Image (tube, rainbow, N blue to C red; front, side, top):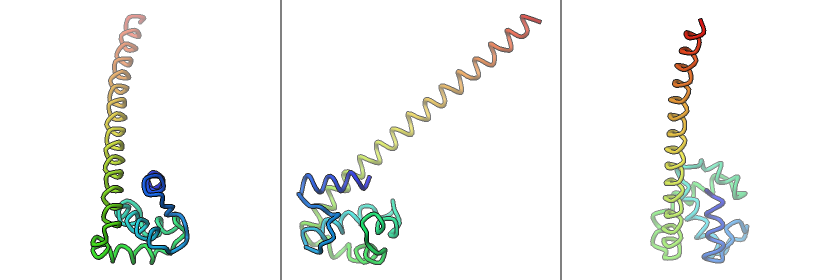
Length: 124
């Protein structure tokens, strides 16, 4: 999920949020990414991914409301939230598909057990 968001920011905004420099054009979208990922990953996990201390991530969490007043941040945050929503939808659909397959296989297994029992009875 984070990889998709990093690629999106690079493609759509020509911003490499993996860059270590502290230019506003990099820091603001990176902060938006941190806040979108909040609740999905720990601050430590996000920090490791970006080569940052977890305190840096927490700092951006704390400043989210103030950052929402910055148009670049708000635009990035909203675009990344859409990606997250799509990711969640795909995850939900994948889960439902897997559950359907498992249910089908359970029913098939039960049917085969019954056929096996009938065959055993017929051969006895």
